[in-house]
Image (cartoon, rainbow, N blue to C red):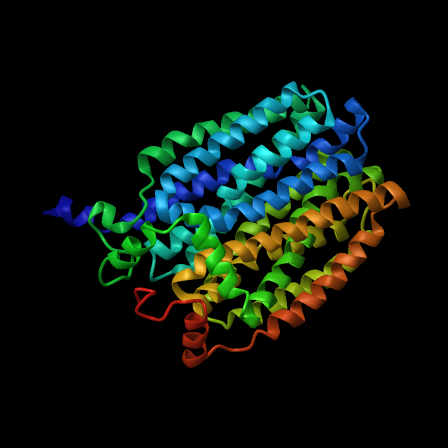
Length: 438
């Protein structure tokens, strides 16, 4: 009797969330790699920053555009299969880079193969886990799973920087491949697609929602993803969310994540030191994202987004004056502040997609996340070309700061959705409350 009581204390949803956290963390290794490898690849192969940044841009675009299709594939074939295959793609793409001899190899392996793999493991995976397994604590769990990427950066980045400067960048790539492979067994054995698969319900849910699953299981994933996009694109909030998230991607993954290390190196800072600063961003990103998830359960998400984007824009505008050969206190303050804000935008964005688009919220977020990575890709290649032609990154930092202030205004313009407006928006995407299974 005591044993049975003990077993029911921890809901199965928490185990699924834990496995998802580990899987996302494993995929984060390669997401942390581009900034570490730009300089070694330039030195060994003579490729320009623009050439390497092009491969990064392809990776970022596919990372984003794969997400909505991955969400639909998870509906059709299950999270376990999709995530396991994604990790294998990451491992293959990362491992095979050690054999490349031409820039198009980098484009194919680093850009295409790993882009597809990481795209299937993008934040839409976290949104899908939360939507299926949680009714209570959705914002908090979204924040924790989003923080998994930051945790992966924290773990991998200093190690990868040390390997790239010591044994060489090939050892760094093989380390990422091994880490991704190591996660596959855990995903296959422990991850479950839906609560009803193990005879339970979502945490906080009254009963299993089997009808929507049966209805969506017969729909071609690509058709469903494109149908949801076509419907959502007819609503104003979609474009405001997508536009703001494109700027979010430009100011994080595309600019800071890709070019902070080479920009610091331009000012005389050693690459391992700069990589360690990015790892510190990862430390505070965990706290900021989890806190943002908790706040998203209690505060209007559009207000949170406006505050996050506004503060990020102001911080980027002061960054060019903070670079130096040594780590000054002012740079440390920036790193802490930027870390708290890094992906704090994700939980309120997921919350708004769910609130406005109901059962299609995860797929809509997939498309919004796609815009995030398109923005990141433009920023990655644009900053690389700026460095090539102007000899410095300053213009890129100032431009990104101004765009973040624009994103703050766009977020506040979404407006507050009453129950009536939410229902109208859901009907416009082809789902009412009954079709959403709620």
